[in-house]
Image 1 (cartoon, rainbow, N blue to C red):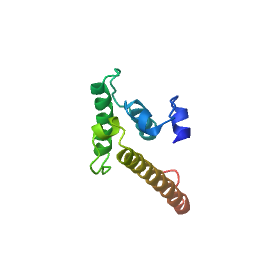
Image 2: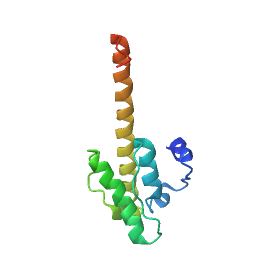
Image 3: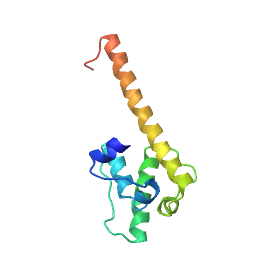
Length: 115
C-alpha cells in the first residue's frame, strides 16, 4: 500500500487517522481500479462520512462483500473494521491482478496472446 499511496502523492502515517476523512481511501480505490470517484472537499464530519460512503458504495458496486462496515466506523477510527476494510481491498485487488496474469499466461501458452 505504501508504494500505491506514494504514487498518488498522499501520505499515510497512522492508518486509522489518515483514512478518517475518506480522501486517502477514495484515492486508493481510484488508483487500484482506474475509475474516477466523486469526493467532498470539506473537512466537516458530513464530508468525511460522504467520502467514506462513496468508497464503500463503490466497493459494493464492484461486488466486493463488506460485512458490517459502515462509514461511521471508518470515520470514528474503529481499528478492527478499518483493518478489515483494508484487508478486503487488498484481497480483492490482489486476486484480480493474479487472475489477469493467469489469463494472459494461458493465452500465451495457447498461442493466442494477441487476442
